[in-house]
Image (tube, rainbow, N blue to C red; front, top):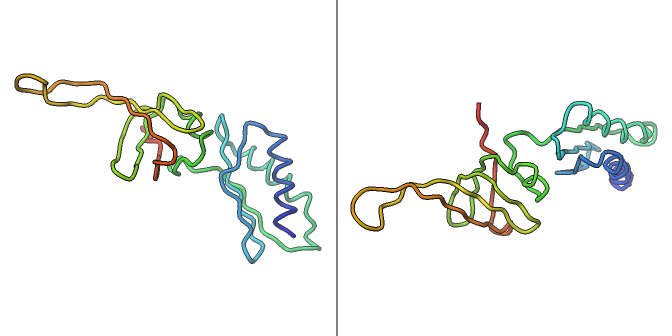
Length: 153
């Protein structure tokens, strides 16, 4: 009952703030409500407060005791939704598939796949030495085990 009520309030809040989207939502056995958000332009403290208030102010603590936590997806959290990839076009990603681990710049993201580009040193086709080549690979979402943005400081 609590989960259905919170789901409805959460959906209403997300409709009100269309740049935000849901990454994770759980209601624990002890009525601990946990909401993890991301946004097309990132998520700030005010966004978390707005969604938290939209839920909390519409639930009756006399009816049901609960705790509520609304957070943003951390910078080092793995990407999970196509919408997250789209907002990170131009950034460097580390992508792990079943067979390999790739690092490259995210140049494209569709509903089904991403495209990574990077430079690699490979042996020359003829003669000795190596040559730098531009590599490009399309990876289906179904093949991605984990993908994270590589943060630069």
